[in-house]
Amino acid sequence: MLSENRQRSPLPKLIAICGLLLLFLLVVNAMRVIEKRREPDTTHKIRVRESNTQTFSSPRPNIAESKEKKINSVRRKENLTTKRSPDGFQLYRYWWRGGAAVYVAEMDRNAEDLKFDVELANGQILRRETVSSATRRLKRKGIESIAGVNGSFGIREDNWGRGGMIFNLHIQNGELVSIPKLINRWGYSPPTPWGETSFGVTPDGEFLLEAVKLNGNLHIGNDTLQIDAINQICDIYCPVVIFTPRFGRSTLTRRCYEFTLKNLTLPITGKYKSKLVVTSVNPRGNSIIPSDGIVLAIEPRLARSWYRKITEFTKGELEIALTPKKWQTVNEGIGGNLRLLRDGRIEPELTQFNRSRGGSAIGHHNGAQRHPRSALGFNDEKLFLIVVDGRQHGYSMGMTLYEMADFFNDIGVKNAINFDGGSSSALWTLGEIVNSPAHGYERPIFNVAVIRKKNE
Image (tube, rainbow, N blue to C red):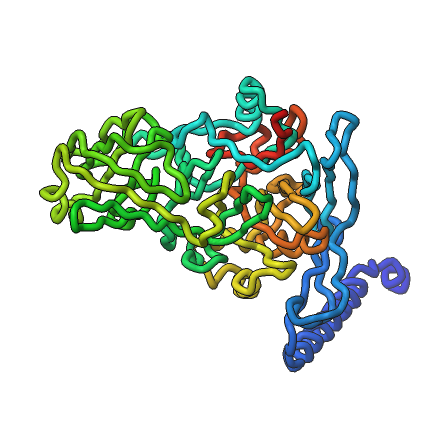
């Protein structure tokens, strides 16, 4: 009997001891949770970005209110500038501590041989084009591009035949190619400078970053018709639209009342006035856009009070004046959907958007998630074209809009605008795409923000 007891397995005792240890750990953990819940949360916590992991630091005051030195979010900075790079141009890759690769093309604002420019995909509103294709096309025209990034937002395609169409402002060589009506398209607050912003350069080199409004009127006798947009979709939200030859072959509208206008000066600019005459009336929409004229489209319900006032051979005058007034002379302009930084401070609405985790603008909640991003920024010395890679585990997961603005502050950007992102994010430099697009290839886009050599 004694021999049998000595040979009995110790396993039951080990199981019992492990069970007691587990129970002890559970009790200790529960006490910690209870104690933590009792502590008041007097300040928000900031995210400390380390490699690909996320932890939280001790509380600190709001960044906008704090005068303390900010935590540097840059883990490593690499100079990718080559011998082929012209004077006044630099290319860097930053490794953000939160787990993202950021490519930044910089142009010195006082560079003698460089300038900012924009290019419309395929030279017209409809259809899209890659950044690489646009720079090759510019080269055939004798324009040498140094860097380019995808720009404005738009629709890629729809069942009306639009194979790509800008939703933002676009001014090229002084021509007012596209300007939308400021409506709540983004889920933010479009009438404010934060909600729908454009970047432009005046003839004397001043950089502008603000919301731009179209003040357009068609005068017919004693009557005045307000113009809502140029080369945009005509519908109940935007009932009066002008279509220029830059749009494409036809207006692609449905059931709009449309009037072909000729004998006027082209192209349309930010400060414009011209006499005109109506040469044809089309009550069915989808009118052909003449190369020497424009088409005025009016949404059917509004058109009821106008189709008898505007007939063939009617004469009138078209007048346009952009506001703010400085935009009337802008040579190159491009739109986005958010101003991220203003004079070195993150926009207050963006701070609120971050605190609410996207709840303050639920129509665009993915702005509070990490994705690939594109942007344009500047300070007193430099212009920046920026791409954040994302959606690539083990390499780069992207940034939220707030994280991007916070990062820009760290690297010296003082003013910044958000461009179309996601799989469209691509930065081209000196003949190749330098970042890693999310889908592994370039996606066709609507327009390009370009750093290029000045024409000799």
